[in-house]
Structures are given as C-alpha cells and as structure tokens.
Amino acid sequence: MKLSFLPRLALATALVFPVCATAAERTPSPAGAEVYIVSPKDGAKVKGPVTVVFGLKGMGIAPAGIKFDNTGHHHLLVDIGAPTDLSKPLPADEHNVHFGKGQTETTLTLAPGKHTLQLLLADSLHTPHDPAVISKVVTITVEK
Ligand SMILES: [Cu+2]
Image (cartoon, rainbow, N blue to C red; front, side, top):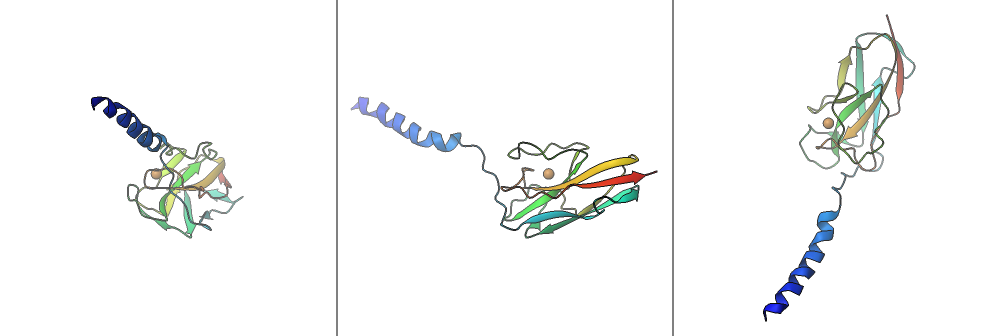
C-alpha cells in the first residue's frame, strides 16, 4: 500500500512542473495599437529645453503597477536603440525614462547636437507588450 504513494507523487510533480517552468507571459497588445511622438517632428531643429509630447492610439494609459487590459505607460528612449530582448522589464536610467505616473509629455534638457527619441509602451511591470508597441525614431538637432 505504501509503495503506491511515490509513483503518484512523481506523476503529480511531472504534471505541475511544466506550468511553473514557462517564462512569465508578456501582456498582449491589441491589434492596431500605435504609439508615436506628436512633437518634436523628425528632423526638427529645436532650442532646449525640449518638450516631447507622446501620442497613443488603440490603448490607454495606466500608472505603473496598475494591471488593466490594453493599457501601459510610456517610456522614452533617449539616444539609445530599442532593447534587443523585449521580454524583460526596461531598465531605468537617463536613456530609458519611465513615465510611471501616466504622464503623456515631458521636457528634456539635452546637450546641443543630434539626439534620437523613441517611445515604447510597457505594461504594469515595465515589460513591453507582445507585440511591442513602439514608435518610429525621431531624430532632432538641439541648437545652441
Ligand atoms: Cu516603466
């Protein structure tokens, strides 16, 4: 009687383990969702400080930490390319600026010269959606 216990435990473990082993699932984004930089325009020559206005279609804004379908918060990529691994939370530094309160614009102080700006929406845990909702790159020149 006691012998039958072990095989059953092994079977239960085998059934449960694959579920635990899968990576954390990314939050889905709805078809047609689009994020874009309203201003400045690509190629613009501007004087600092630079106000960047964020645009979003087909999804809503929710503060970081708030999980709600079809929402996220903005991240502005400044002078850096999009992350190669979009399944991980975005770092927070001067190149990856989080707007976790749900802000839809910001003002940047940038050194004179060329700069790239790109918006990336991410979920309550700062991980990009699947598929990622990312804007075109806007290149601006900050004049003295
Ligand atoms: Cu974030």
